[in-house]
Image (tube, rainbow, N blue to C red):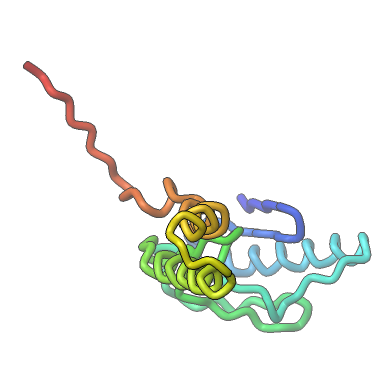
Length: 151
C-alpha cells in the first residue's frame, strides 16, 4: 500500500518496504505515476530537491524522479521539522536553536533602545514561535509514562 500526502507545494510518497526487490520497484512505479500526474497538470517535480529517508531500514534504494537519482539522507525536512531516520531529534534541536539565535542577534542589532522590555517583546513575537513550532512533537520522548499518585 502506497501513501501520497500533499500540502501546498510539498509532496510525500511512501510505502512500507517488506521485500526490497519488489517494494522498491513498486515505489519507483509510484514515483513515475506521480510524475505523469504532475505533467498532466503542467507541474514540474524537482528531482534535485527530492530526498529519500529510510526509517528502520538501511538498504539503499536506486530511485529516480524526472531522470534525477534520489539519494537517501540521515534526516529530511518535512514542513519545517527535521526528521531523522533513527527518529531522534538532535538535528531538529540544533536547527531550531541556530535559527532562534540568529533571530535574537538580529533583534538586538535592530533595536534602537537596548532595554530588556523591548527585547523581550520583540523576542516573544519573532523568536518564541521558532522555538515553539511543533514543540510537542519533537520535545517529548516517544514513550510517555503516566505516574499516578495513589494513596
